[in-house]
Length: 192
Image 1 (cartoon, one colour):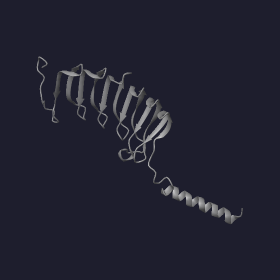
Image 2: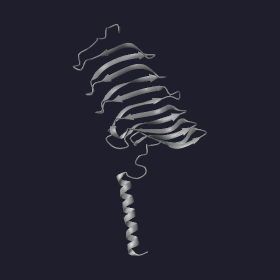
Image 3: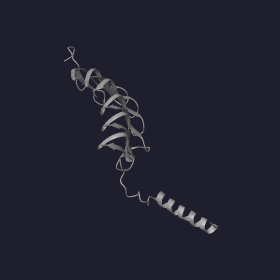
């Protein structure tokens, strides 16, 4: 192979590389696809899903067409400050959310945290956050229904509303303040 042949091969490689980088290659018109394996028409093993814009949507394991184990979900590119920003993380069992889950704002700050029982119901303390990191609301779930004291707060951390729940229904309250911190309704001594 002489110097001229080497130069031609190098130019061809450079041309093909430029087409690929410019998006002119054969994949330019293809829609994003979900990537994974199927057995008897059902999803199994590790899968990766994509948004319509081609950015990563979610990834995790399937067993017999049901989500299993740890999963991550991502914002589409147009909503994320950074490509590949995680939207939510948590575990699945038999297609239901279980254990600890976290959701995030597009900038990566924590937006919500809580847990699910083995039946996929919310349990324990749940906390949502304003984008500035202050608590937005917090309260407890028992077998998927609100129980006990719940509170919501303004972005500056001051209490906005509160109530006590029993079996998912307000027992006392809710009591609310307007944005100027004036009561919209007042609790009575009897709790009614």
